[in-house]
Length: 86
Image 1 (tube, one colour):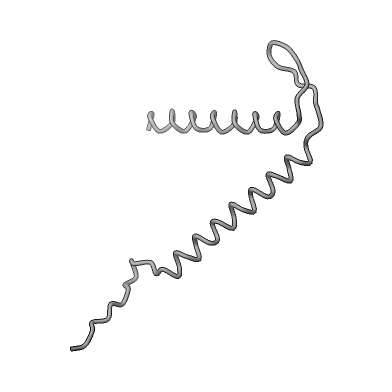
Image 2: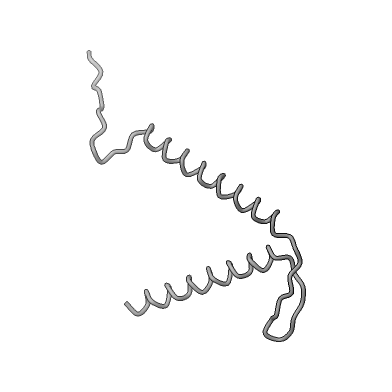
C-alpha cells in the first residue's frame, strides 16, 4: 500500500506562505505601534486649542488623536453614504 501524496494546487496557499504573510503583518503592526508611541512621547507639550464654543489647553498628542478620529469617522460616513447611492 502506498500513501497517496497530496500536492497543493495553485488555488491552495501553503502554510509557509501564510506564515510569512502573518509574520510580515505582525511586524508591520509592531513597527506602527513603535512609531505611534515615539510620536506620542515627543508631542506632550501643552498647546492652546480654539474650540467652536471656547478655548483651552491640551497636550498636542490629544489634539492630534482627536483630529485623527474625526477624520476616520468622516471618511467612514462618507464611504457609507457613497455606497448607499451607488
